[in-house]
Image (cartoon, rainbow, N blue to C red; front, side, top):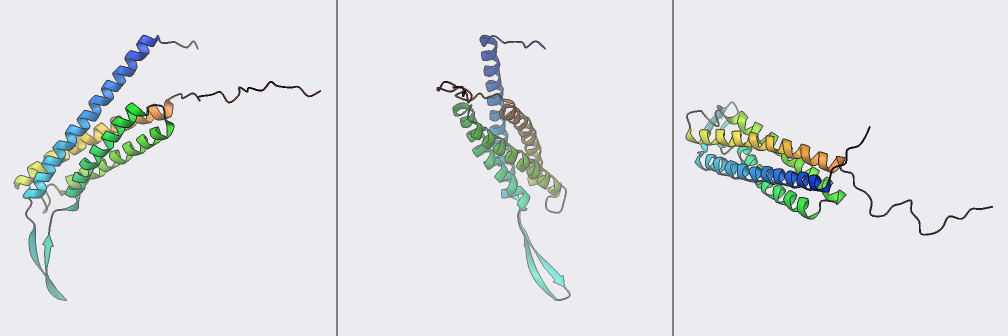
Length: 189
């Protein structure tokens, strides 16, 4: 097979386009994280915990039902996204040729990807349940947070795949050739 060589100008345009796409995806991740923080934060604020008197055969007690943990986990996912995206932007610009930084970037992407998957599914389970009846106003906000959490997860699917491709398919050449030697080869006769 004949290999096609790209001109330096075409390669420069390709790299610039990839950086622009990466910057757009990262910007969308930050914007969606802000939307999730706002909508989920409002749902947490508007939620009214309540006390229930529980009657059992062995005794009675008051039980308090507060904000579900899944809602708070979605806020954590948004905060983690801020830290992760800032790190990924800095690492992509400052250390594009370091192999170890590339592996750390893949790990950060994978953690964010899995966190958003777990977060939006856990919150979606609460919608329509006793914790979040459909007629409540804060549940509308929670639905928006769930939708934007799912979109955030899709963005991380895309960026995780792109990061894995860049890190594991890149051809990094060593700084010096391991086969070259400064000493002449002597034959033993």
